[in-house]
Image (cartoon, rainbow, N blue to C red; front, side, top):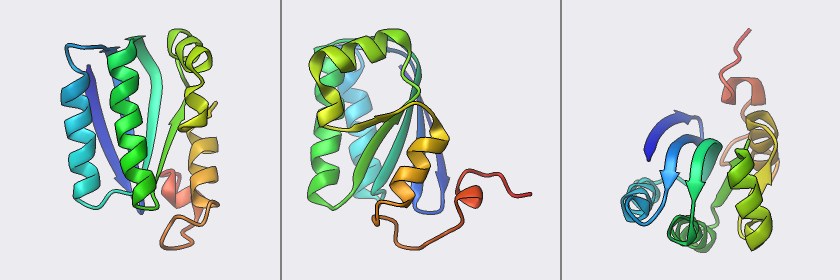
Amino acid sequence: MELIKEKRTDLTFLYLKGRLDAENAKTLEDNLLRLIDDGARQLIVDCSQIEFINNAGLRALLSVAKKLTKLDGRLALHSPSPIARQIFNTTGFGLVARIYDSREEAAANVAHSGLMSSSDNLQRILGKDN
């Protein structure tokens, strides 16, 4: 599992690539919990490159979502790959974390949720300064 992080204003964008299974779920969970410990409260995760996800992977994401909720934060997933979408739908994971079709939709909904500490321009958040 490859994890890439991008920080923009109050949002932290993450990109997951590969398999999210028992071999790497704990490492992913530890990395995400470290981001939260360092102050991240709005995590937006691109799931388009997830090739496989099992119970261990779901448990890692659930742990992160629970910690964020306790801190008035939010976990938003977007652009799930077909396999990730199937697993999220089957397990009802959308009840734990919001799942959006695009990065823009996820960022807009988190930005308008009242959880951001400032009312920054959405275009700046998305890195589309024109």
